[in-house]
Length: 402
Ligand SMILES: *Cc1c(COP(=O)(O)O)cnc(C)c1O
Image (tube, rainbow, N blue to C red; front, top):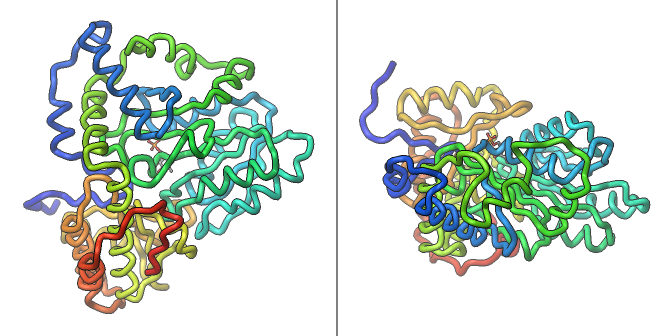
């Protein structure tokens, strides 16, 4: 095995690197989770999370991966035999669909090409046809981590409203929350699903559900057996800062610190930093003569960039060379994209110099792997970053055409 000096570059789109400040905040003795000291921590993270989700309603925190938070969302709102509308944005939407189907729920899966986000027009048309209101929920992945495409959730909301359809809106923000503009209340989302190891800059182990009153009401009448994931069991002790079972105490210390970091920088500044780093990455990719997977500029992901390999070159071979030579992990292509794309994560604990280091590793790797490209992509990214820091705007209003 090759030994490397210096830090490993973890440039995958989650888990993302954990800031030292968060690591230090977690380096604490485990405390009694029934104590007054714990309740203070519990209240701080439950209230702090509301600011990040932009909701006045409850945010539930499970000791789980994101997949657990997906399941919690389903079992608390839907019943076997229900019908839902989902959109095939990529690998993660496909996995979520499989999970929904396992619960005996019928899925109308709007096909997608994995290069575009969920189409508000198509969602609206489906709902308009559903005059009997059989569709109980519209389920969308906000940032499709397998493709680097970010769907426009506020436009999806508008399409649901225009169709005057009562379906719940359930959104996976696992790789977008804390990195991409997102507004649970304002956009009328019923359940926002997220987890700790992406935009929250924490280790894996926490799953989140932000829930609307309508979603909570659905949970009072739906017919799905549940116990560990039951929202009402959580909400009772949460009111006092406690949990019904042993929470992931030290991850919660980290969460308190991570929320403080996000709010100190300011969420708008966090979002524009991600957009800038993403645009600089695309400048490099374009200069190399490679292709970004996402075909819609208004849907470019601020979190990661998926890059297509030229025909005849294997993305996994390239990633192996980058890891062996330069101690950097890049994201792999998933399911039908295996070997075809590599993904550069630029989320969370990432700034201009981290990004330029990562892009240098990619450029060195392209040379080492014999992938045809035009040298100077890193310089192109620098040229972009030398430009003015633009005023922040919601991502789909400000299109950086690179
Ligand atoms: C990472 C990810 C998941 C899965 O989360 P786990 O913590 O691995 O269970 C689901 N959806 C999206 C969009 C993701 O990026």
